[in-house]
Length: 214
Image 1 (cartoon, rainbow, N blue to C red):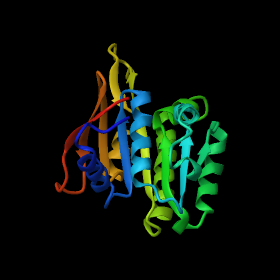
Image 2: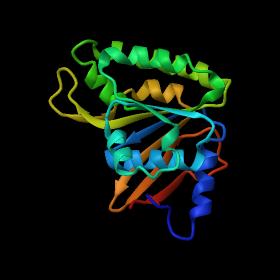
Image 3: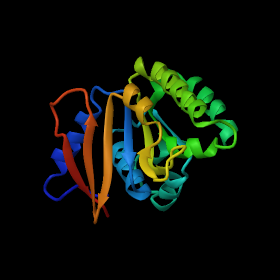
Image 4: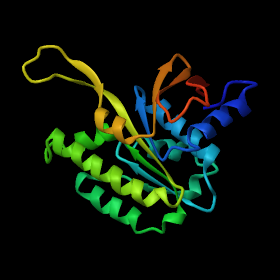
């Protein structure tokens, strides 16, 4: 992903402003590839080379992205997890065992895949409660050390009980809306990613902007 020509500095400023006060951000996405490219641009722009980036890659798309982009400046700072459902509690515990001051970013990608991963073990409401627990724990360990958290949710189709029509929604919607300081909707359109602020802490930065995709 490259920033729109002649606007690199302003776009980097927008990305910096987005996260200047927020601790938990949620990205609502309709395309896997543009999602990981956007996350990569954020990490590349804002990472601290002295700290750790924890990436819980349930989708595994970010793993593939890193394998194809080994020259990224932040790659040496990434600790990557590709969990099975029974391993996620242990991963959260491992992240919590790290000194708070050493945590830069925690990315949980994605809530949708987490629900799918646990479909045979937990019903949707119990799975959502697990997500709420993870959000609370991760917020506690990052709030004092200056770390940031990103949760992603992919669009999905569901048919409610007793209804005939399929409805599109994002997993963890109401829970993520309550707990997040920042919510961005990412929509791929041709060769651009349209970014819209659904929730933000103030109006001091652009609500909507676009990024060019490589």
